[in-house]
Image: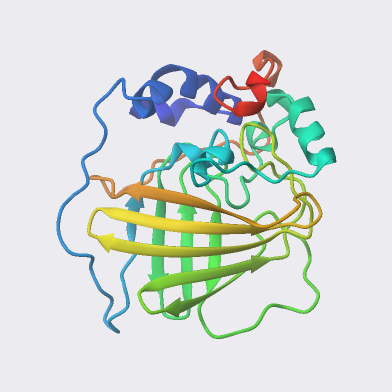
Length: 255
């Protein structure tokens, strides 16, 4: 896995996925076995989500795969047309820009919890992070649109609920190219049913691009090594010219 240290661009993510990483995610290598045991707790009794987690491929290639079986993304006509027109070489993530929400880069990520705040740290893309404010504040009145928005978290029993607004419209939801607008509002619900598993539901509400709200379902396995590797991209992708067409794993590429 030291190979990852030498990837210099977001485009290399795509190339790498088509090669060894994609093979691992699609079953060419034995998947990581989830450690067994009860979910840990923080000193205050709340669930401890800390650790390095694997990724859910449905939040990388095509978020439609994260829907409940039988459901389809409720795209507005203009959003459907744009998704089909977008090419992988134009993907902001392939050009070393943040993935936004709910998208995940195809590399591990870490959850860190501290009093009043929780962090999601990402190994891939630009080694970026999300901060979730847990201090009881409300959303800001006049937000400057950003890649990860403003995330406010709270506990509902053993579930961590994250309410996020204030997104820009620059990131794609996935490799397929599903768009959104600055009206995007996400609500994520994270659970840790046992030591080795993380589960979450992400409800997407964006009346600018979708006809109704919809919910995505994700899961991740705790990784045996608790380290993130260094990954540098920084808008210096020199290989986008070699990314042609659309990724064959998303639905729009088959239409």
